[in-house]
Length: 185
Image (cartoon, rainbow, N blue to C red):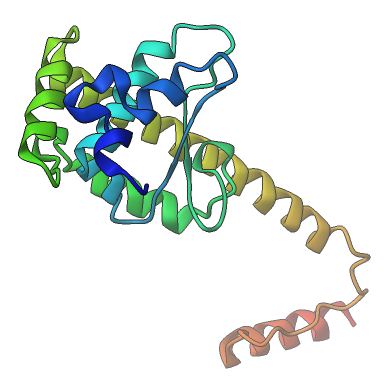
């Protein structure tokens, strides 16, 4: 990051540090750190990384795009349901064509690259949405599994012989419980 122009390949994406890192035989996937605003998907060099991820996703050893938040990895379902839903809402309206760059020449170069891939920006948008959709499914499964486990743990305790009132019991329910108790006595 000390010599940004060199890191960005002096206008040649094939020489950028992003391209060289992703094409390294040691690279197993792309990690993108996001929040609810999904700002990286609004930056052109980040979309370049997504483009390279799409290109590499056909390789068996490449794991694809992992979307990470401060709470965890979205595709693993441990990033929190609220975050996953907020990200999905943002991505639903996102058009990657509007991504910005500090240098207009970088934006134009990467736009041309993305437009030249099969499906162009529509394919890019579809890939991003499909990735978020899979992350939402994983989040849903994780939430359901955790909820079922908690419910099972909470209900597996030995129940008392007489029903106990809860903090949320209304006076009408208490009266009904009292009637049921007197009928059984």
